[in-house]
Length: 510
Image 1: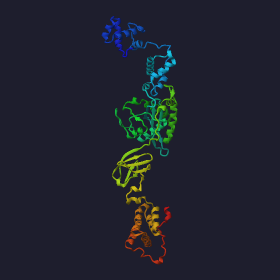
Image 2: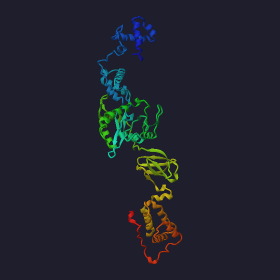
Image 3: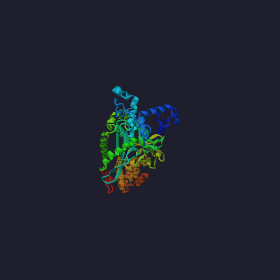
Image 4: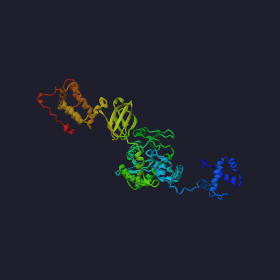
């Protein structure tokens, strides 16, 4: 059989020149610009076929082609190979048709087809199967990833508010074994953590990830040189795999993912359409139960389930998981605000006040927030998801702001260490304001007088202020500055009575 068949129009001309014009083989070859051996072979095929000249009226090109090239019937004494089994085996890494033929030939000996016929018959069989089978997928090689188009509503039972859960789908090329997960959205964190969950579900890592060109995966789509998202590259490096995005507008590059998404929509999402879910966890539980049924169903083409094919092909070929699970890390560039805090997801984290106005790099995981300046770690906080809250370390604050870390109990304790009168003045100041925090600065100013004038003088000045019913910091400071503390205290007064209508007592602050 020639490697390249000539056109049907030339075959018709060849037959006409031979049987009507009675030209020689060499003259026909010269007229049609083909070789004399080709003319001889075609005429031999025509004579041994069921056709005759002139051709029957309405004889089509297909009928002529079948008569000349496909007219031979298989040898009835030969045993046909099991091409379904061959198709499964060829998915194994390093498997070849030659090896499969040798095993087939050893089994059937003289009843086996020759290698060339074996390959030709397999090619013919493959063309009769579904078009998706034409892609050859090696075991453990590729994981195809995409999101379903339809979403699932999660309803808040208290408010009736609905949010849409996105459905993540990942399927292995060789076995079609499929992982399905509902996530909050198609943001970077949901995308990456779904990958980590999929790898743990499969119990290993494939050689290649084949995602669509969505934003969490691809920073800039390009036919030849797409730019990966930085976090996606970090995940691939952590699991020692590579990313090969599908070409834009080329759905055949990820036909496996498209088919898996369609199957998930039909066999899982449609079954959940009448159910109402209040949490993401309950939705994922329902999906996982239906996914077990999906992976356990027998595929008509191969005669086995996805799970069985996975255990046979992909599972032994996957790379091992790393010792530590991937932890999502979000990075951003931020400017330190005048209040020496950096805002991340509506929560403020403190940083040394000397960096106010500077730009810093923020790295946030699910547990820790780290802040870097010029590559050096300058602050680290536990992650806090309280919106509009503050996480502040005292050492990050300027000295004149550190009073904000004081508490009434701490101020009372300091005053008591100096004396009962000083404690009473502090207590009076805390009670004199609508909020105790408004008196912190005054209390600190009062207590700091002990460093300049001594605790004994401060205690005496506090007694004088209470007797004069003027327990104010400015009055006490004036007494100390003018050395007048103790002059208004008579020896007959004895022990100072610290009961006062404006003093609630120390137990109030416990």
